[in-house]
Image: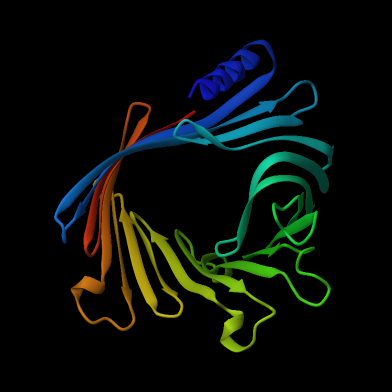
Length: 303
């Protein structure tokens, strides 16, 4: 706790005497979990947040520092610097504890990353190469590769984990996230509609073993209502909604169930309400997945 407070004080002090902008967020959550089988109630309090510093100087946003914390421990921290910047091409490096990946394939830990951003008309390509030293791995140095490509109404994000350790005779684990903006493609106005797919691909397997995890879904938004539905293989379907009809209070909920539904006990569901009070955002939620139900109150702030 003392180390975290010292770090935050140092960041504020630096910002006071230099051309620095600070942004971030913080949250605290009180939850009570009820076990209907026992019965037993377990209350917990958790917190977390992040702080981002950008040093402007005389050359724009060239360098910066980012830190994320959970409780009173730092979970990630890194520095970054833009090496080269133009309208069509830029290069930046990051050094520290970095999280990277897609929905089903990810990695985290100390790494050195080079980020390349390329733009040409409607096409945008962001490529990142992460180099790190795996603990107890088969290689001294390993690498991850992340690439996000956006053009017209399609966005593709791919992540290859452990490129070096995969070896010459095999392939690394691959994650792929794809999104299609159907509203833009179909020229739908005053509404949003998109389809997405999240895949975990094991090129070394065969048949359906190549897709150990996959998810297909659609999301929409119109007027004061938004929501979506999805299928997460091999046997889960779900749906969610959110409405601002009672603004300034936002209401939402979700339901998730197996395709081989045998009874109410197989269903997971939840509901929540959010609102803003001064600088604070509040969320009250209830989640149920037999035999447990959780009631929670979360307070957050952004700056």
